Image 1 (cartoon, helix red, strand yellow):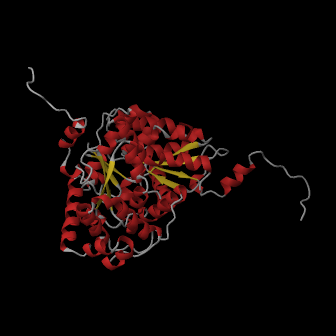
Image 2 (cartoon, helix red, strand yellow; image 1 turned 90 degrees about the vertical axis):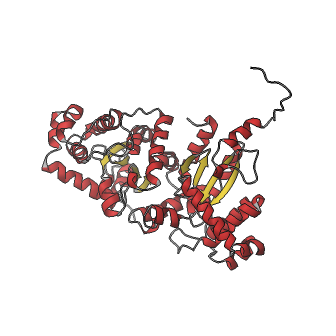
Image 3 (cartoon, chains in turn green, yellow; image 1 turned 90 degrees about the horizontal axis):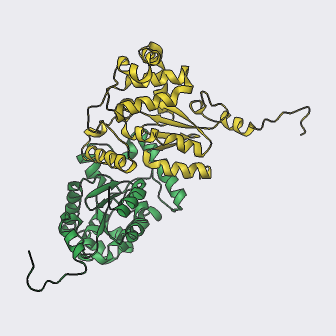
Length: 228
Length: 228
């Protein structure tokens, strides 16, 4: 078979073909030409915070960009999986607090908030993030870092749109109170569940989910080898 | 204050002093002069199997010996923590199966048993292990590897003392059916819970617990630095 006529081949065609085969939730909002890492996190998750400080380096080492996807442990863990909150679980609760502090000491992460402190309602933060993903995707990383830094680093309570004003600015904080933001976060949570995401952090690499900060080294190897 | 008389200082005194301060369950059965790694595992745990293949290398790199401690996820996870079996947990069950197979492929671990296969009753194996720890501690590693290899590697069912005969020999298999072995496993399980152990594998380093095969790199750094 011979092809007739002129065929233009984009130097990025391999990437486009790649994207076509990806699940919808993996396609970039703003990074249409670059393969992505889908980073799923709940703002109340300390290991999600730690992962947020490393995910961009991991992605950049492999020529990828990060998609910042808010999820809700209250939905995945408590409603879908039927489990109790981690810190209320005998044995695992105390262990997890120790594990969080051990990680923070090793990596030099300063935290005003302690892992045993009262957990905020994460809806306002998640809605702000979901709204930014839709309307100002170029600011997604900045907003994620601002919220995580304020909550875990500075120990602020960010459970209301008002509390978000000094952290993400008026426009985004007000948007977090909108019906649209409610729907957008719900869609994010549904998409995460559809992708099999239940814990924070979870990194999805071309459909392959990796749960936990302890998986970052394996993700690195997976990306280097193209899976196995 | 000056000390009078002759004082003998053992070249190992620092280790002895160290041991005195350790919890009883951390003291070696047979390795009284060498610091240990307490390795807690359930034979039904695939990640416990994977960890069993690496724990001795990890210990040896830091001049330690391994203590092989059987535990029961059916007690820690289901009775004490009040959770359902991992593979019956929505989202987490399918993820865990994928995670097991991914690890096995990466590390070249051959398994006749699949992570979704019917789980055996681990009591006979745990009792055999507990009895060996008390009566033939020098064979602990050999027996642990034999059972893990037969169950996961060859896919054999080892839920009865009879089934253990070709794997660990007559004496140990018969001992697994003894009242003493029942009591010894119960003591192992109690000690593990007292030490905060709930998952398999867990490595306890001088009182510091690390849960999961994904923690092996951090344990390595912990041992290198002497903690942080």
